[in-house]
Image: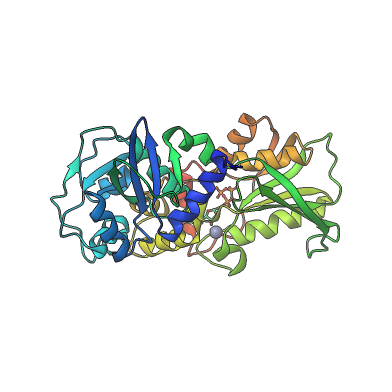
Length: 358
Ligand SMILES: Nc1nc2c(ncn2[C@@H]2O[C@H](COP(=O)(O)OP(=O)(O)OP(=O)(O)O)[C@@H](O)[C@H]2O)c(=O)[nH]1
Ligand SMILES: [Zn+2]
């Protein structure tokens, strides 16, 4: 008997492979390519790739623009990998950490012939694995290695890379400082991705708009008391308000660093120490300003039986996404706490560039 894996199962496996530094096979109408993420690349794997053919380096357009290299393929850029390029060169192309100290010098050899479809799909996959958006691609003809995960181009559709349906797995009563009547629910996505949590306070009436907060994980702010952002005070103020009103629901979404993960957020913090603001830092790393999928929050709310919220937020994008997902926002409840000397510039940048309400 043959057990065929579903597309979602192969996508999840591919993300794991890429994070380990294992190549994945992408196919499209007879063409095939091996892709491997730049971040976990080793010298041994690089040598194996070179033995198979001429590797191409793929970066996001944002990263290529930072390197002042022309971009021919819209949101991505392809380069010939120079024969003399070693691991350090590839990492310096991928990671902006040393951009100022040791600027990368061109001329780079951008590629513009042939279809960039496999390159683009590979980069989306690498990014969804929360790795720096940079990869090597080698075109191959016949591929015999049955151990490698294979994906067809159609498997890497944007909707498949996003959060998959979530289901409740466990819940328990949790008395908290903010309220005796707390209950924590864990939701697990079908694609094996990170779990997300709902903290229910009291017994909110499902027939009326519930006081709700969509909180994105911030290890540095929530746990360490970082002064660089306002997340910790926002988390505690939201719970306190729900405790005072006697009812509410706070979703704790594991979308650390606006969806780029803690490692990349710390890379962004290092760039901020070099003088770039929070948005510029994300762009230099090759990410968009905000890589979160707020549909996640709406689906958990719906799963819990809520259809209308009084949303604690200063972010209009969260309100728009709730409405688009059929959760009506009866009221925006501002959440302005935790301003410090160290986060004044950060909050001002969010207001100026990301449309946050003050
Ligand atoms: N990439 C990146 N992420 C950051 C930075 N500072 C904070 N974060 C992350 O930003 C997110 C903030 O989450 P929220 O407080 O839910 O979002 P918000 O968009 O500010 O909206 P509201 O607080 O609801 O107004 C968390 O995931 C933090 O980890 C930064 O400088 N760079
Ligand atoms: Zn934070």
